[in-house]
Image (cartoon, rainbow over all chains, first blue to last red; front, side, top):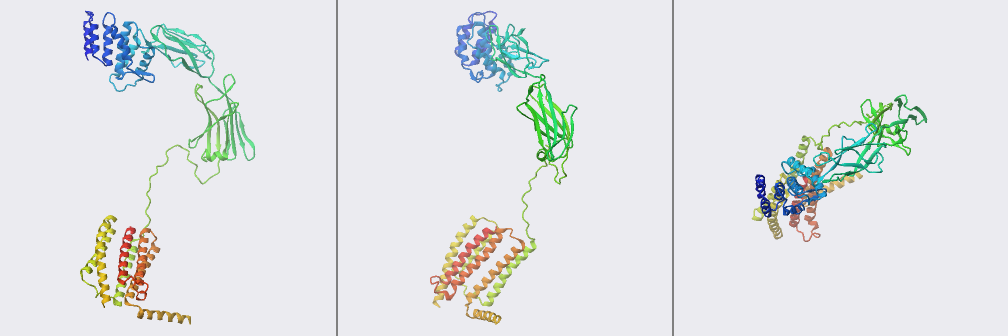
Length: 493
Length: 114
């Protein structure tokens, strides 16, 4: 490209400071159309001492409009390389000229594009990513900024109540001279400017309310920096809970009496039940200050000590946020437990996004007695079942070959008998004429017989009909002639 | 006396048959008897060993039955006593029909026998 030569010429003559270089660049640019050549021209112009040429600076606006905006990213057709080189040239030249045709929104979208890793086609992607980000971060006219949360501090607990934020440039360096303040009306943080310096800020929560909160913030940035789009930070307040008011009860449904009842204050209960048992377990989940809350997940799990199978039941919460599990073993034994008797370990499992960790509490050791049944217990384990191999349809039994052969022979016997009877009756073949029609007719009959035999052996209907049609015509004509001759002879007699 | 009647009837039938029936018809009757035997043997075989494959049994049996029917047809049409009924159909024509029908029958049977 001519402009590459122009660039090299600029670098080599920089020491002599030839003012006509701008003219050389302008001339060369007149005959170039591509974005890359313009980008190199901008870079060259920014290195040449003296004022930036107005034509070249103005062309930045035209070139940037060739970029495509797809969603929230903006890029040139040539991908990462073209976009990064354009940013380097245009921003360097804009910095020299003191003003920029690029807007805040444009640099934000270019920055999003470079960090989005959307261009997978080019080589040297790491190099051009750094070129683009460095151009965006180190220019003096337009630097897009971003608000980030440091050290996973968005999870707030009473032990770690501080939220650490930072305003950074595209290369990840904190922006000195920037400020951050929390908007009024936040529930957990005090409103006002955050303490901190050199772009790193910290604030401590004052009230702890369980849940996920959106904290509104506003950034103050020195000139030349573009404020981030982000205006809220999501924080999660995590607090421990206490399980209280537990009641474990076994009721005999037939007698309607309570067999066992425990509040689990002295540890897990030990209980026995059978098909007529109803198991009830109630509990509530309370904050440290005593108010009841509801959780995302509350289960009761039965683990068989014999096979390790696990059966889960969901604990339902009523309007007062009291959880309960109610099992009637007359139906549950076969439906949920697969009729597997034996000892089960019963645990309560509680989970929620705002709990520091999931809680597993052992409630009881429960022995299920079931009557002996001939059927084996249902296999509730999740291991792979035996593989099914396809068995093809077994062909029906055929009779033994001896019998079939016997009957085949038997079939021919009556034919012999017939011949003998015909002979005895005096059937005469003296009238058999050897005339042409006679020969043709009998020959045709034999031929048709052979065609049928061939069909039986293996050929298909098409060939059979093909030969048959020819033969049939001959046989028909010959037969007609023969029979009419015989009839005439008979009449003459 | 009913026994005597039956015996008398049978012997009378036999003697009448052998004297009064033309030779041509006797030939055809012998043929019909042969066809019947063939059909009976097929049926006994099927009763013994079952009907698999059913299409083969059907085609064989129906072949016997249809041949029997065609033979009966031929006999009726060649009987001199029936000349008044079959005025336009000579014996030769009846025989030609018989042969043609057999062609069609055997083609179908061979196709179905499998």
